[in-house]
Image (cartoon, rainbow, N blue to C red; front, side, top):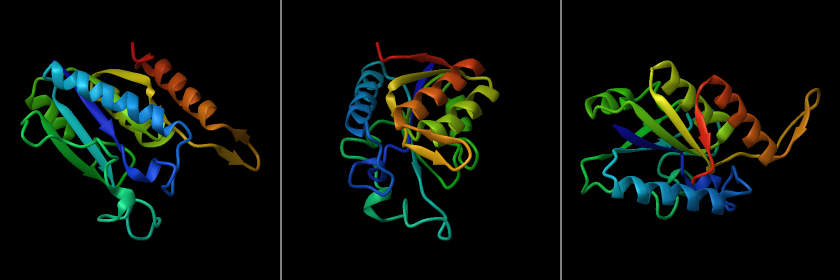
Length: 179
């Protein structure tokens, strides 16, 4: 059985948010296309929302606009196959009942999409792999930000996204372009 996991499709990653992703519009469109497809196929859909701890940042504060799921996103609670999970760490599995929920539904393969490719999405993919799930990632349904470091240099958001996906592919995740 397949399931879709949407990691942190939240307003904070939009151009108006505190953590803007340059390809946000395109990635969100690809995410919503995967949701539509999963609903048509009656796949379970896990929506994961990130909240920062109070001492961490002014971003992703519970109840604030930035922590809300992006427009068009979010569970259809009339369907028992959709669930919202909330976390305050990078991985979707660490402090949630996501694995239990997936196992109860007989899921062995997960398609994971969302933001940041190099942080929460990457951590969630790794957590799924070590738990024995087959993992797929729609590369178009992910996004990252530019990174810079005094010693290591710079990478554009697209380079960060592609590098993270390349590392996940080397670990066993199947990366595809949405088709």
